[in-house]
Amino acid sequence: MTTASVIVPCYNAETTLPAALESLARQHWNQPWEVVVADNGSTDRSRGVAESYARRLPLRVVDASDRRGQAHALNVGARAATGRFLLFCDADDEVGAGWLAAMGDGLRRSDAVAARWDIERLNSPWLQQSRGNPQATGLQRWTHPPFLPHAGGGSLGLRRSVYETVGDFDEMLAIVHDTDYCWRLQLAGFRIAFVPQAVVHIRFRATRRELLRQALDYGRAEVSLYARYRDRGMTSFRLKDSLRAWALLGLRLPRLLRAGARERWLWKLGYRIGRIAGSVHHGTLAL
Image (cartoon, rainbow, N blue to C red; front, side, top):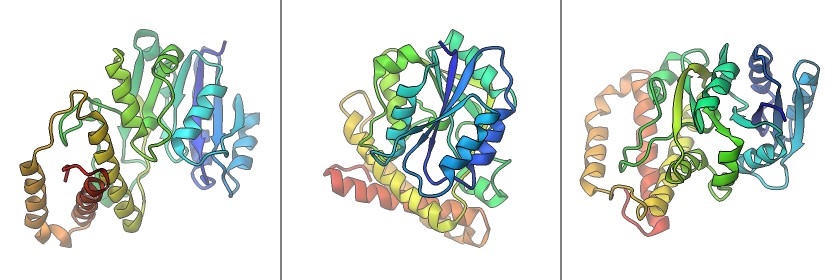
């Protein structure tokens, strides 16, 4: 059996996929490994781009076009993989030197691992300031309301046995399926270890419109997680925390003249509006 399978979910990523695959082609490891690109029904040249790397990588492209969604592509890729370790890498990110070996070594000791994020290489200064780096020194904290830590899906690695125990990524979740998976994994008794030697260069959404849309989506989706986990140990929502967040948005209005601060404010506004929309949809108070 292959030691590790790198699973790359892909949808219309012809502009970023070459850099992602180039970063994988630069990896060195003394164990057998493969790359599985799960094409989620791309209408651009993504599939051809991926297939062109089969000369430089032990790479296969699998068809995940029967259902749209990144979670579905992840599951199709995981089922097609032959490795004892499953490593996940987004088609718009790049892995750093030594990433593969560090993730593989980490999985020899731990049930699951998460790489360190770098946000500087692929993002302008204002984008870096607008989003910050929640996975620079450890797993991401969940604070609204507090619950278990988590990691971005494109930085995760799992033992195959863990995936077979926990099950598929939830295809009902368009986003935050990675957070949901991290929580299910931990509630099942497994542990996620942070591997700072493994670096993923993260690419954020590059326009303000994309930034706002993503913030709205995250706000709505996180209410879905609250509705799902509030009876499984998640701290109860506190209205005063939401009111404080809205008050801070008002206090930070004078900062909108500064690039970076303006986009960070826009992200937070979109997120709060998304929380309201999610609360209405789920009939719960999680503003």
